[in-house]
Length: 307
Length: 290
Image 1 (cartoon, each protein chain N blue to C red):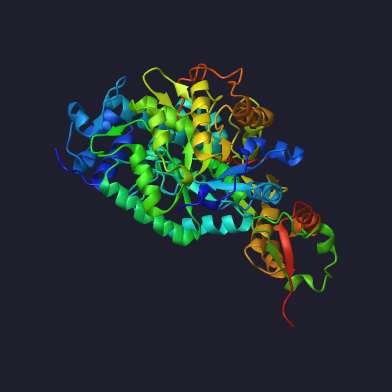
Image 2: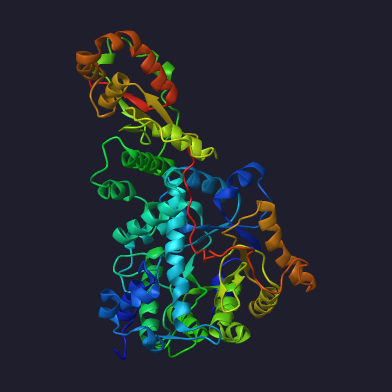
């Protein structure tokens, strides 16, 4: 029998570490339960990003969340990249390492996007085999997130939740359930988000993601640029009930407000779980005001600081 | 139409379609995409299903739009001064062409702009005069690439730096045979324009200044306290510094430099060493064995 969360700890309510908050965090050491980093921003860093991370890892639990594993790609796994992930995880005592059920490129090219897979036996066997290899190299379970997606492949022979469930059980890996992504994909693919939630192997869910998105009417985009909407809060409550409680992380990657605002958004989760009342400022529809160029934001980039 | 499709064909097709500069409709018609899956736009539903609210082509376009917007945004963050000099619209056009010629291949966005200065150089109009507008842009891009590499590359923060006092304690007899090991974040480069002043103005949020007059500019670029610093140095100081950084002994470097700059060396040598110590260009003195 699988232990809840694969035996990994419940860390509470965390915040995605973003460079615009580096100074605030080092200056105030806010009372945050844990941080999640974008792995690619730190695995090669010899400068301020790594210095800041080392300071934070001394004081808070840290989880590594990647965007370039490309577990579903037909290209060979990048062994050097995996070894760098492992070295950083060992150095900072990362509680776990996660990435996405997706592919990011092929033929040596990287789109830096989380591209969707068709859900069928060939893709399932391919992904399961690669997860096993990755877990051997990392010497720990891999935790994979359901991405937001925008296309449905005619080739798919199973639902996303059936694919994810079989993948997790056959590869013996963990799941990062992005509740906002469930909502976005359900809207884009015309499925019932509750059926998605109910069908997963709940004991394998190690972590939740929450975020804001943009609803364009015809489709939703996973913009990570605003507050969590009330329907996603409700899905989150259901998911917490189904899993008996796992770590929650808020992502905010565009139009990033001051750290206190981002932290306050995830703390609403704790309050919401306690009293069941929707946060007063939760909208019923996701939106970004006046942003015609809103795009999914899976990866972030840290630009140089120069005099 | 090829049925059933392999996962490999589907990925090759999708990558070709999404990265086509003219949009996904143009991508569908490209040779690369059609080599993987031979369909045209009105057959797209055989690969991508429509949703209740959106047709298949529009769904695919979500990824196509995001590909260029995201990468152009990232390139602009690495090259803010080049972007300011060109203006957003022109910068974006350059960026799209660059991404076509050098599509990203690394797992990290830090590598996205590695080839951008070379791209600008390779695409410089042949009728553009030397020392003109195009050379200014190329210089600016080279400087901003140095900034990106120095910012997140190896540094010496946390290690005691070699100070001006350390250098002053070396006896006059010892100096000629000594070498100085530069800090790993030190870069030396020569430009046709004072691009550092333009780049600093942009990074401080000022309006884009006028393009400066051409003037040979030698810069020492390094990092202290995790911030990239740049200093303009004169030609004679730059030559001496370059020779020492390249591994010559202090004596060899001075002797070579003195052939052209004897008077300046006599007047400024001790001041230069003091300045290099204060700027933290070196991390240790390497004395000859024995």
